[in-house]
Length: 152
Ligand code: ZN
Image (tube, rainbow, N blue to C red; front, side, top):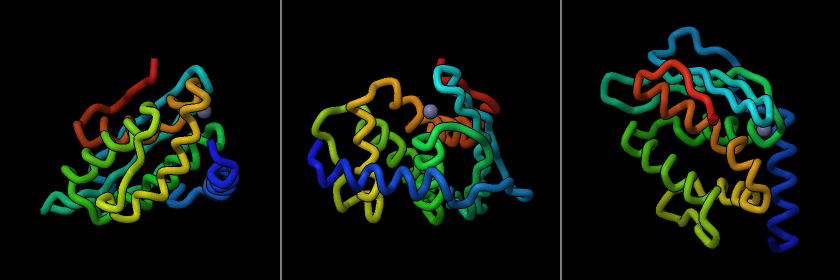
């Protein structure tokens, strides 16, 4: 990784990891799911509130885990608000590729999702991919009505 990106990666992980956004329960959530990553010990609950038209009205999470899992969940909750369920699924697929495929980057077409690009840093640490994608898998499970997922 370029030094510049490495530095940005550390800043973002530190910022979101120590001060996660939307880190609370959502009393009026329309769906939720619990996710766990036993390898690292990350555990979280993702709450989604969907509008009748299928857009995300609100998204929040609770839980404990390493800085990467917390940072990824924090960024995810900020990014999915206002998007349709279909758009969120596309973003999830793009994010998963970002974490696993060398050279893959999110482009401008993803709107402000390009800030997720710093999380591509987990490619250097395969065991961390599960940390980075846990919140997204859990949100996906919530949208599908599955109450619980594990990375195992
Ligand atoms: Zn972790």
